[in-house]
Length: 273
Picture 1 (cartoon, one colour):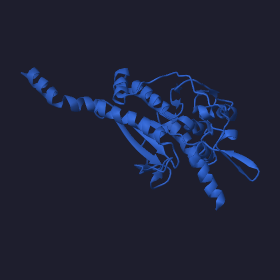
Picture 2 (cartoon, rainbow, N blue to C red; picture 1 turned 135 degrees about the vertical axis):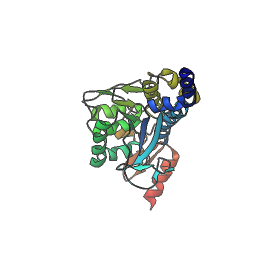
Picture 3 (spheres, one colour; picture 1 turned 45 degrees about the horizontal axis):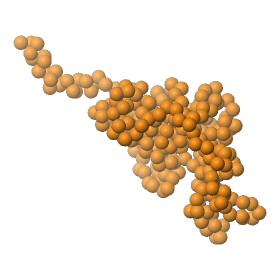
Picture 4 (cartoon, rainbow, N blue to C red; picture 1 turned 180 degrees about the vertical axis):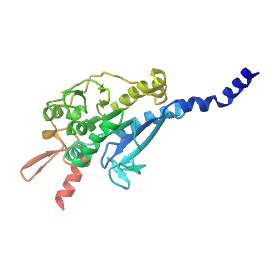
């Protein structure tokens, strides 16, 4: 009789018992003005779908360094859940990338870099996406380790941080507590890799199928026709590398190249004022 009663209790309470025994993986995404939308949205979507598939084993939230709406690249507004000072301790902290003009400014922000160093000791994994790797490098967290970044600025990364071994032709590099991914959609691969670490390959595979995404670990990088020299080829408006050398403006004795006619028009508008 006792055995039957025990079985009945397990049938009705088993889900709660199992969920109580399963730790929730807390995932925080750092938001900042000008960040690349896909760098944020791709990994966030991976962990959100993992939460749905595992019935609550993941919690995803956002944080920003300053209060108020954060506007991404392309001026899409996102309201963060927390300020960085109020941020509940996460297990995974995601650092999205941005155009290099934005990243080049942030990598000299001592307050931001101090915050990143602080979280290195309190989170299980720091995940950077694309140029977000520059923030980890500037904080001194990647010295004498391997790392990857967006291929547009990879050569500049290697020359700027000679103590770091740049890995090309990969989607991500796993150093245990720090995972760096290449550009944009490679953040999805990095996030799926972490889901596999926490929940197993089966769950990670279910998430990938739900996103209609085929994850990869290695992939030959494309090569920009002009090479990958940010200092020489960056669009002064958006920070992206200007591949098409036919889009340019001569201004005050200097030639400026642009990634698109949109940026060229913006430059002409600004200089005309």
